[in-house]
Length: 101
Figure 1 (tube, rainbow, N blue to C red):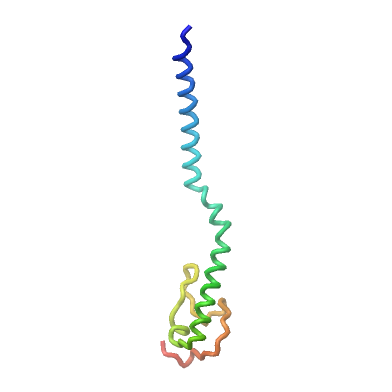
Figure 2: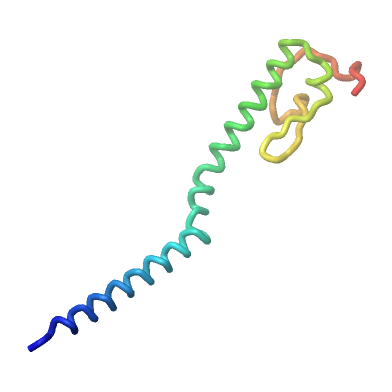
């Protein structure tokens, strides 16, 4: 008998089901699937940002740029902090009380 037309229909239905499953998986992954990458890399990126800020402040101290060191905030993880902040733990001999911002 002629079963060829029936085989094509079954194959098409299977491919449509697989395609819909892939699209559902793709939408799920895009909506929330990347969050586990963020939770895994967030501590590393924050540490690198803090170290870069610390090095920038140490360079300002060595270059004796008092105004920038004492008055200009540095963006660290979306937060503006000064080089004199204790979070950075920069050892510098500059006296910021004499600097007019």
